[in-house]
Image (cartoon, rainbow, N blue to C red):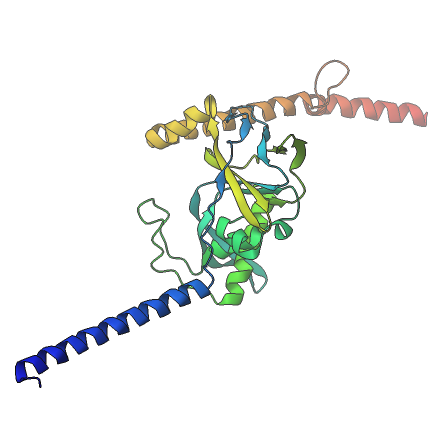
Length: 332
């Protein structure tokens, strides 16, 4: 027979063994479920490709700048499609929307465009929608739809154009979805006409080169692009996803007289304004002098070298006497 102390010890030992068995059973169950359930694949980050070669690496805009031809070339994994995207810095832009009020056209709204890249050029070896899925296109911002989703349009803008309050937009109003979609489309088409936005499929040439694929792209740099540094990104695509990528920087700088005037306008605005006024006055005086000289040259002259006006106004009485004598002789 057990006494009281022995019974308590036996009871505690049974409880301890019970909890231990339960813990072992739970561990076995969790291990079996972990083996049975399929493991989710880890996110595969794109591999790094050799950076593209830019020809030229720096575009210089001088006084007689008429555009520049740019070539981008490099290598990608074998059998991959290639997308080349060139982006500028994001900035805010302001526009006035015209509307007809009665018989005249007036500014009926002020539009504030936010987070829009200054330049967006997308080139692909095929159709981007067949090379990547919609999620990848939106993630890497590779087509028109992805860019328009990130552009924010505000209406009835009351922002100041000074640098201190340019980015605020505190008094702007959010347009309704249909109006916002219309504004986004109009903004994109405006940039397309300027040449700063474009989406060109089948514009990247691919050539098999051993175990890799060589790509090459030729295009004209947009004339209305602002000076700055532009990011050139190359994406290699296979199986509807990005498998590798690379990047480089293309510089667009002002040189010569345009650079001097830009520096003068930003660093010494009073000198730039005074010079502009003097140049305008000088141009006005020269235009007036040239017009006066041309008018004097076009006046008709008589045979003796005098003008017709002076011939008519110089001797009116003699002309009348000669006419009277001619008429009398004719009657005789």
